[in-house]
Length: 356
Ligand code: PLP
Image (cartoon, rainbow, N blue to C red; front, top):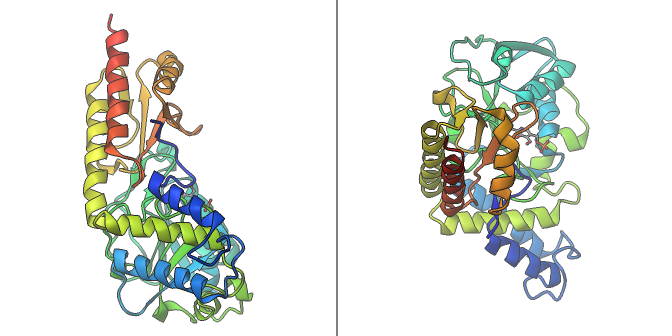
């Protein structure tokens, strides 16, 4: 069995891939492939409806929020958020916790004024700044809940009266969040939801229509909501596979249950990183991500041999991002705990081999 610790895109359970492949050949008794069926057919409209319904159900989305399925990735949201929410002359506050957060604020600067409330850039983003104030007149406060590259995660939503906007691309649906704490949540689907090409936005209706800015239709949340996520041709296959994966998540007991598994997976691996004298974690302990676990070796010369040692056991995708080095084990919802145990065994056997 291959143990895929890759950071994405799109790590899903085998059973979802199997169902998806079947629908490429024949979708739901239509005699057509899911790839060729018209998105305006009742069969496909049902897919969109069920996908949105499952997102609302699994995340417990309250009344007064819309869920829209878009394209352009989370990166498109870096621009759409300020375009829709930041009026001329207003300032938006951003927390800079990594490359994705800083890309988001860079795009916001094109639209209006940006205030960076805090940054951990000076420490290569190895911690989440805690001590900051969000000015009460900010149009919104933006943060990234999980920093995919550095392996830090913000578990507590910062308390503020200002509308909170969150990039949850790499930890959405991995743990329970209170959607009512947010005015807008966005996520590229390609970690815990489904294939790349789909972006999920959950937005509080009452914050829209206030920027006074005239936008191109595709960039306007209101237009997308009114178009029922089908203002233009939607990414039909990505939505279909997301729906299958959301069904899988529901059948597993939902987000609270998967959160327990994710916690057990992360605790097991961090425990080994902290115990094994060959390895060490790269982040502030209290900010450690459950989704992307970054670690290095005390002796960097052993990193390549360990990578090979792990690969020989079909443990793949653990090479760290170039800006951190070492290793990154991404452990999204679909990764079984048996894979985590396989990695831990490899670390222990490698330790045994290098005992001097
Ligand atoms: N935000 C976070 C936290 C990410 O991890 C990523 C990609 O990995 C992005 C944004 C960019 O997403 P996309 O490629 O969908 O634009």
